[in-house]
Length: 476
Ligand code: GDG
Image (cartoon, rainbow, N blue to C red; front, side):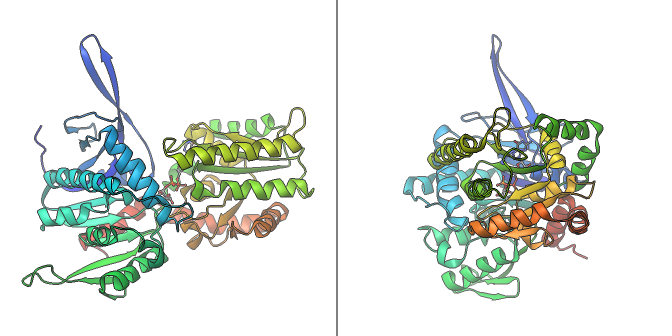
């Protein structure tokens, strides 16, 4: 099918919908199920006035599908990925090379030349599709570490486009980034953009410093001077700065206020035996999230009698993630055995101090947990932003609850009234948990008021508009 070129094109690893394939007697039928997430919500707001096109993978390996227009008028352009593409581009170079390295090497990155070759090939496929979907002078917004080569590939084909790139994960210091065998290609890939957005100011400054150190480029404030590649090509100015992402804050608050969710929150506490203290962790099961450090601190506090194992409970939602990458299987085993050890030592008949849920929970259940929890524990070792921290705050319309937040999560830059921790410091983490447990009501409410002002004002719609306004030059 031919695509009508669009003036706004979003390019992301996944489409905002997942294909559901059924094989029947009359052949194959494909239906589409929305796959809601932060990015989809953010773009919904922007695409309402300008439906545009979305280029991404449909969620099923080996499926080749034509572009189509959905109910809201968006053009969806599915990119086919084979099982080998997924293994080498997604699980390999994206999630076993770049992901650990960009998170400061909290796990050892692996490099394989065939992974890199597939990464380039897949990026080329996305860039070609984006070029075909973009109208003359269109704005193209490329997302995340899986697609860092797309901006330069796109610019080479379509110099008329405005190209933006947003990195959802941290950008590491030059000393760490420089170990990538293909570091030059990645930097040049990103520099095809007009605007490169990062979560934190430190990510943007790590990037600009890497360009100075690695490519000898000059930077001025947030701008990078990118020399032309030919003598007749003028220098370009590329902007690299922080645009901290957020959530659909009003939507979380509305869900938390709904009678069903409030009833469920009360019911959760009852089902847990009306504990004096309900602590909560919600993470994708990932080694960057510091789940082990959190469990270690809680285990020691129970051991030392600081927390009463019959009156305190930690609910840890660790939703399955990247289960085919080896390291992720190991972290699951590790967490399950630690939870088993803590419960083995402190459980009584009818009460476990740690509940580990390794199944994805419905969104309503997550919000009910936010509302029920006295303490939210976000102890990431490194995290671009951490939306869970913001979701907890947005859900607490009752003005209560304490957020314990790692200083290594991007959210710590804005949520300065959380109880901040260095999760590597187990004694410090224990002290922070106890500070939160013993905090008096007026102090809790004062801090939550501040946090809520931040999260309710700076929501994901504001984030998307800010980025696009800067990209298209319509900033006020
Ligand atoms: C990347 C960056 C950055 C989790 N379990 C369930 C569930 N979740 C939802 C949470 C939250 C999301 O998943 C996780 O978002 P995070 O921001 O915490 O982390 P990443 O997935 O690593 O996201 C991160 C983000 O991109 C955006 O730029 O903040 O730093 O790493 O929304 O609520 N949702 C449901 N059931 C679960 O079991 N429904």
